[in-house]
Length: 198
Ligand code: HEC
Image (cartoon, rainbow, N blue to C red; front, side, top):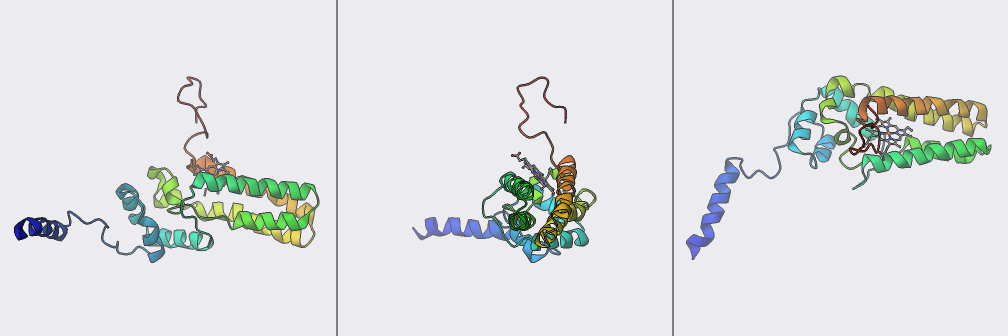
């Protein structure tokens, strides 16, 4: 009886010792703790890509995420993108209605959008998770969220013409990031022979 019980235990112990059963990979050296938390839900391929990033870029990613304390448990980037679009539209409505309070609130919500499950990186194409491609993220962040905060300040100061001028700066940032990281036209159908070429 004892033998039957112990055999699997011994087997498991020896497998674990050999690293075969390692359910959680060893804590990767040089990865900031905040990032290790996100990496828990990554596939091995994704994890490898992130570990290969330079210390500087890892620090940049941590910094970008730190600016967004609202963390989603299960929400995807696409879901958050539509929330962001909705905030953008609310800003346009508020400016059109000469309503600085609503404009400023929506702009701050946009700038403080939630971070999707696993952070931003898993939603980018795997072959773009590298130093060169991700290096543009701070510039995108400045265009979108920096401009949204400027818009909020202008609205707070009652300067609606100036607030309005930041709408295009924000959208320029949206478009730039999509051009780089959004792999296909949203909703493109595999059943069309004349699908959009992008
Ligand atoms: C950091 C890069 C980045 C920025 C900045 C960005 N997006 Fe996106 N967006 C993406 C990516 C990547 C996707 C594709 C996500 C996917 O399909 O999983 C996407 C998808 C979308 C979609 C399509 C969602 C769907 O259902 O397919 C909308 C709408 C959208 N973004 C709106 C916006 C708006 C509005 C802004 C600016 C206020 C913005 N995005 C800024 C990266 C960005």
